[in-house]
Amino acid sequence: MITRLTVLYDAGCGLCRTARTWLASRAQLVPLEFVPAGSDEARRRYPALDPAETLADITVVADDGGVYTGDGAWIICLWALDGYRGLAARLSRPDLRPTARRIVAAAAAVRRAGSSGAGPGGPVAAEPEFEQGYGSDCGGTCDA
Image (cartoon, helix red, strand yellow):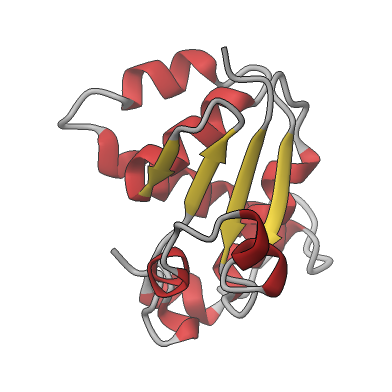
């Protein structure tokens, strides 16, 4: 039984930072802890994980030893949130797995745009990394 998840994210990527903030702001059924991928802390905790691979895409480590990457990592992050388990279950279908990443990115983009001061219905300037696609502001290292 999973009781805690550690999310290794690229702290140099605007989308990853915004997604982290969005995930952290949601009510969690399973606590999410965030550790910058490739950091000394991440290397100390998870010496068996390749730091370059954890920087290439989100990696989630469960306290039961499970390691989730890519689409599976986004799905388990949604699964950990209150009110998102049904969505996570639907997105776990093979044909929908890539959609999990887009949903988190879209939610993060809405949150980020909303914090820019634009009110409901008002103009919202698009963030460059959301216009170009997932991970484009970090050189594409987290683009999968």
